[in-house]
Length: 206
Image 1 (cartoon, rainbow, N blue to C red):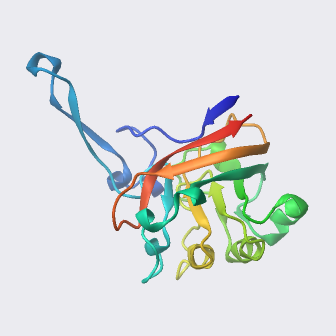
Image 2 (image 1 turned 60 degrees about the horizontal axis):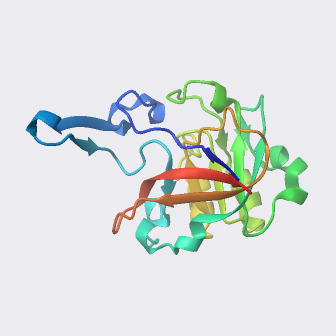
């Protein structure tokens, strides 16, 4: 069995959404071994690093991260690679249509994997692409950027997916991962009433 970690480590030097400092994790040593034990205080926002968006992130009456059944965060996944595109829409996804299956995860590897994740001009999923995936009734979609859409008024990509119960996983580390089929686990921190949470996202190949 092979296990591949595709999540970003939480650290003070980590990349952040559009370079925003408040999106970085802050680690503060509050006790040392000389005082009896090493202890660290960690401060971060719910959408820091590799994380899962809950419907509550964009929908007024949407479910919070702790209200989503655990089985939704685990299942078969297809990792595809789309390079040389500014945005991912229906046209870019059509070549993989026969392989995009109901109740499966789709992970999209783009030029983001080979660039600074703090860039403002990252590759994103368009509204048209979101409608296409919603029609496929996938379980979730993951992307190698710290946001699945970019400066889209009203956040249509998020709302289309989340209103259909499709999980959004942002901030995946895919630069060294080969395309193909896997099992994915993306269990977020169990933060009551929260709009999203960091997750340790793993690909499993049995």
